[in-house]
Length: 265
Image 1: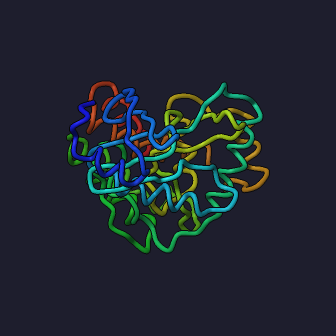
Image 2: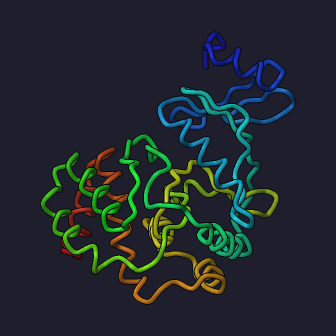
């Protein structure tokens, strides 16, 4: 990274020291050292939403820990570095319990929160109705990748497909790449796209690239049992992240999104 970048001065002021030792982490993220601390810096659209999401998650007792926000500006987010170690069965169980605590936190409406999931802008308007929220978000994404017809057929049935219940605070982008297995023995979460939604959404996204670990699911259900029929709704809640991936990457994600939509049409 070029040390002449304008945000280095802002970072130095925030941490009281000159930053150095930059190491790329992929995309628009770097690891660096400043003021005797290891930090992560990210640039680009959506960083303010991410910072707000981290702060919200940090305020939920018993939820997975998140990195401290050191600096948040329009085009820059700096957080504390999380030292990592190997994943363990105990951490999987802890993640299940912590997610149950997170999903017990109410949210005043469906939607709201972040306008971004990764590098994909998403509709962040709020609704008092789950069907209207999920239907609107799915259709908006489908319109960007030519899947309006398939998704519209699902949206027409959402009122009978979605489980009953009030919205909870969700991480909103909970895939395994956003879970860090901390050297302190705790599972940490990064890169949220918080909003109000059904807890099954977070779990379905976590299972997008493989089944949930048994220990995680059992620990979650011990604290917060899932409503009947949740297994049949996993692919339904995976339609949203699959559409996001289709918008960003296309390819096989489009085929998976189309197949998922047709399953519920």
